[in-house]
Amino acid sequence: MDRFWHKRIVRSGPHTLQPYRQNPPDRVMTDDDVVFCDFGPIFDGWEADFGRTFVLGDDPVKHRLRDDLPVVFEAGRRYFDTHPDASGEQLFAEVLRLTADAGWEYGGPHAGHLVGEFPHERINGDEIEYYITHGSTQPMRRADRAGQACHWILEIHLIDRDRGFGGFFEQLLDLPHPPR
Image (tube, rainbow, N blue to C red; front, side):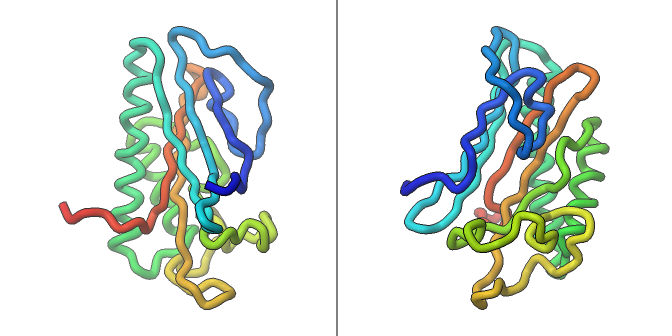
């Protein structure tokens, strides 16, 4: 690993409700907390982005949230796999539907972004076509400006606003996975 392309995030308790762009103050974890980590390392010039959630204690709702994160991710991946012309907007709508069906609220303005040979050095962070969100209408399976296939990170940020916590799961969307 050479360096990180985005800030390293470790959030706990109510700070897990916050989307990426927020910078809540430091907080000491408690014995019955939910914690998530979000790291964006660069390996040999290529971006990676990885997020996972951990639960301290026995709260069954927090454990259900943690367990639902990869389920919603995999369902989003199945949608992407079975809809070859899907746009970022269409995948985002599906992630919102999956989130509601699981009984959660979605915690961010998007459900992922483009990654590759460090494109975040070259792109404007406000260019909607580089995100899985409303208004991103181009097909996700397309070539980037350099003619290379686009690769995407799918982010799942589920929250329980009333109980004051959330969870996060992200990884490469189009990573080859073994047949089922």
